[in-house]
Image (cartoon, rainbow, N blue to C red; front, side, top):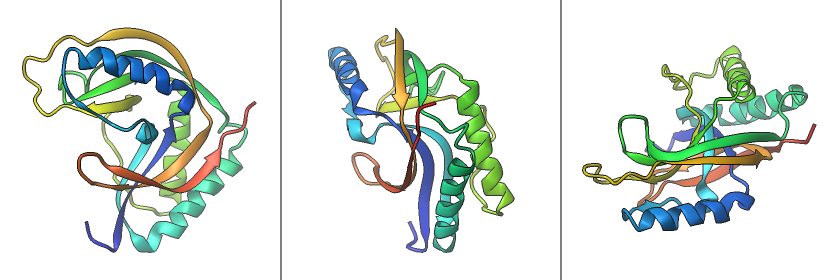
Length: 188
């Protein structure tokens, strides 16, 4: 990656309270398939992948990110979301292991408000053309042939108490993330 660009995304990091449940699922799946699990402290729900952004725009993006949340603080609140299942993802491709999150109007609106303010402030980013499918990536699959069934229905409710702007470094074996800005989501 060029030094004059940063790979950025906006996401809701998982709180540590859900880690034991995830660890238990990982142990169950390890009996069926060996994979490299993403470290628990790296797990997050991506709202917007901005892509490679020119370093000259970084301070402006941080300001827009923070201002958007503060100005819409009646909307950006502590969020409880439901995890419906664990399975391979994306649907039909089996390249990763995902926790699937039920679609949620509040989550979609958060994404839309942030995107709208970035566009309004002339920040060019990699806008996705596909439907938003909220999920948490737990692992990448190297070989996706003859995979065992891992789908399991879950009825977990988890809290997200902050939203972050991250920089991503594509290291091996996992990407590494640095929080550039973080805003706590207050309770209603």
